[in-house]
Structure formats: C-alpha cells, structure tokens
Length: 450
Image (cartoon, rainbow, N blue to C red; front, side):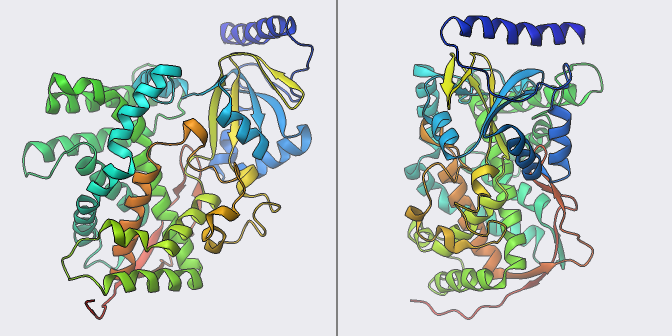
C-alpha cells in the first residue's frame, strides 16, 4: 500500500512540475482524499445504492463542473456539462481508457485503447460488422432469434425475470449475427454455451481490483477471458485470431448494455401507460401488414419512431454506462485549468441527461423529447459517446432493440409482479435487484394483410 501511495504522489508531483514549465494555470479544485482509497469507495457505494446522480451533484456543487479527485489510485479530473463533453469528444489529447482489470483481461490493443492510425484501423475492422449496411443483413437472423427466445422463455409462462431473459436474448443475437455461430445442434451450440458462461463472468470483472490470486474475483474473470478466446480460436482456427480479441473486447458490453436498455424500457413502459399505448399502436400497425411467419424488414424498422424515441428516453434516464473513463495523452487546458498528461477524465452522463435546463422535468419519462432529434442540443445526450469515439455498435443495438420490442409488445401484455420492488443498482452496469420480475399474458392480434 505504501508503494502504491508513493506511486500516486509521484505522478501528481511529476506531472505538476512538468506541466508547470509550460503554464501557470492551476490544477482543478477538489480533493484526492485518503491515499490509495481516494473517492473510489464512496463513488462505488453510491452506484450500488443507485445514488450516483446525487453523488455527482454534491461533488459538482462543492467544487464546480471542473474538479479533481482520486479514482482507482489515479489523479482524475471531472469534466461535467455540454462543454466538457464536447472537449472530451473532440480533443486529440484525450483517449478512451479501460479499467486496469479489463485491460489485463482483454489486452491493451482494443478500440478503446488505441489512438491515431491504429485506432482508425481497428475501428474500420469493427465497422465492417456493425455499420448500417451490415446491420441490414442481420435483421432476419435477429428476427428468428427473438421469436425462438420468446417461444422458449416466455410462451406458456406467467412470470418472467426480464434482465436475465434479455441477457440470454442479446447473447444469442450476438452469437448468430456477429460470431456466425448458427445453431446446429452440435459444435456451434457447444461453443455458444461456453461463451455464454464466460461472458457472464467476464462482465463481472469490469471494475474489480486486479489482484490475480486464487479464488479472487479477478482471477476467475481472467480465466473466463482465456477460455472464451480459446473457444473462439478453436472454432475459427488460426485465421480467427486477429478478430477474436477485438470482438471479445468491444462486444462484451454491447451484449449487456442492450439487455439493460430492453429491461428498463419494459420497466418504464409498465409505469407509463400513454407511452405504452403509443408504442403498441405503432407495432400493431406494422404487425397487421405481415404474414404470421414473415420476418421484419429494414423498412419496418424505419416506421418504429415512437419505439426508438422511448428507447432513447430510457437511455437518458438510465444510461448503460453511468460515467465514461478517459485518459489524457498530453497536458491539456480546459476552462482555465490545466490537466496533466496521464490523468484520468471522469465524464458523468447524468450532468446533462438530468439537467432541467436541457431536459425540463428530467425525472419524467417522456419519449416525445426524442421525436425530433434536432431538438436535443449537441453534446447533451451521450449514451453512445460522441465524435470519433462514438460507439461503433450503436446501430446494431438500435436494430436489436427495435426487433425485440416488436415481438414483445405484439405477443405479450405485462405488469410489474407484486413481489418485485423495482429497485436496481448501477455498478458495474445497471441491474435490477430481482432481475425485474413481470407477470405476463399473451396478446392475440387480428391480422389484416396489406
């Protein structure tokens, strides 16, 4: 612990001395807190108690929108608000950063970590599988997976735990569309089962302490990462190695973030009947023009404006990633302060998502905010990031969400189960304490083919 504290102080002193030669601007106001611990524990406690917004609100009220703290024993600056978002997304001296645990589990050459030409190369590779033209080809496969999932896990039941079900669904979609693991009753299904187990363990390691000792959470996550990569490599052969790490790194959370979006969208629709009825009407109009076994088309998805507006409002209220971690690659200046090279940047989404000046009555679920995309000010709605660091999987997630909601809405009615209290935590990702239990009933629609 003394060594870690000494390292932390050395970073602060060295960066201050080096930066001081270039500028006399002060460091941001704030506090580094106790050695090693800093503000890490108090922040994570707030996330676990679903009090992250309050934690940031108190901190920003005390120190202002640009401040400093210690997070995971590293000097960290908070840049809050639209101007901070714009600066982070546009600065060439800011790069994405994974936590130390995830970096060791998936390597440091992922899309989030690389910069410059290497970033463009990896991003181009990933976008081959996630850009709109590619997503058009995935619609039929997603459609089949959603139908199969609802037949297997919803049909004939009276209660469903939504979050675990959505995690299963989005994982199955990922395997079919992105890993090309079509169901075959044999080898592919075996690989899918291995990956499912390992992905569940891997996500638990997003922010654990990277202590590789027997029986620690990190050692279990590290082993899961190795087994998952091995399963993909054995399935694809040596030619698959180049894509394997990028896929595990950049799709590990796409699987869970879309599951969280679907879960909380269902939760908000249960509590907001007007929004629910508009969404049902929209989806039933589409369904009435389809034959019983006809898959959705790309054109059908373009008609789901109310559905996507409701999804965006859900992302505003409960973004899958509550705050975004970045890192400075050079000394930077912002709002009259200097932030030395090597500092982390903590970017809270709630400071704009919940700002009443940007979104009036921000606690209300109001999908109408997003019916006109141009009405949302720039750099204020950031669930997918922004600028050149925009999440490459946002279009894939949109398509997956729309296909899933079409069949959920047209096949079932639901309400919160009496035994479910609806509470949830935000760490490491949003997760309902009881998986969000709902009572379901089948819907029966009248068909009118166009």
